[in-house]
Length: 146
Image 1 (tube, one colour):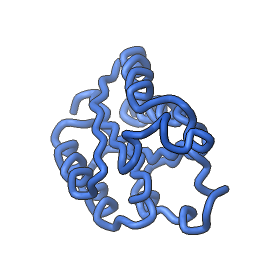
Image 2 (cartoon, helix red, strand yellow):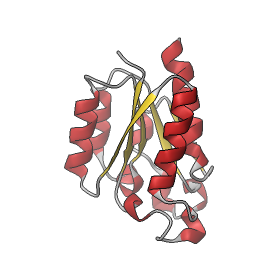
Image 3 (spheres, rainbow, N blue to C red):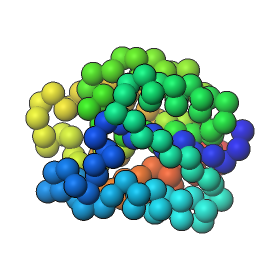
Image 4 (cartoon, rainbow, N blue to C red):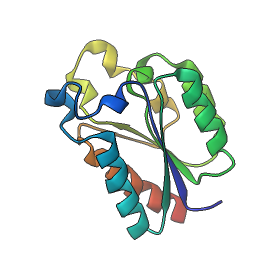
């Protein structure tokens, strides 16, 4: 397996920097991708980025990662709290998975406190803003080196 990390973003993250900046900040998804690509290069890794507002497309991306990625960083956004299908897809992936949330979901509405994805994730990062993606990459670099 290569040092490729698949970074998957769920619904509404295409509006990052524009949608509720008081919660999610002003960085765009393109900013996050540039920061991740630079850090990945420093870590000897590569990143592939994917974002979709559609559950099935996210599942397809996870399935494709099975044959090409050493690890997955996933911010499933609202699907975190609703998608058994994404959980099941992640269970088919043999490498490490890190779940990322830009906001601290535990300080928000009660329904956001439950994550189906956490049942498969090897780590969960929440409330660190978009820096959480970089923290996830650093953790994956450690996990795939072991």
